[in-house]
Length: 90
Image (cartoon, rainbow, N blue to C red):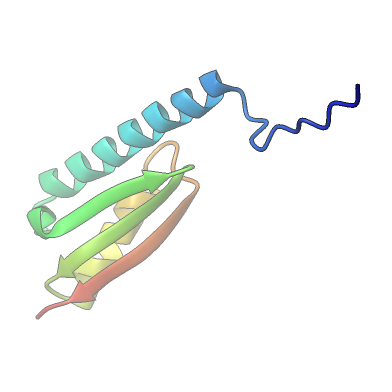
C-alpha cells in the first residue's frame, strides 16, 4: 500500500487559533487608540488585522489625519506592518 496523503496546511491548529486572537487584540488596541485621540475622527476608520498587519479603511478628514492614524497604528505593540487604505474626505 502506498499512501500519498499530503497535508495542505502544516501550521498547528493551536498556533492558527492563537494568531487570530492576537490579531483581534492588536486591532482592538489600535481602534481604541484612534478613538481616544482627539485629533482623529476614529469612528470613520475601520481597523482590521491579519498576521500582524493592520489594515486601515474608511475616511480621514485630511492628509495629516491619515498620516497620524498610520503612525498610531505603527507605534502599537505587535503591529508588524500597516496598510493605510484611508481616503481623505475633506
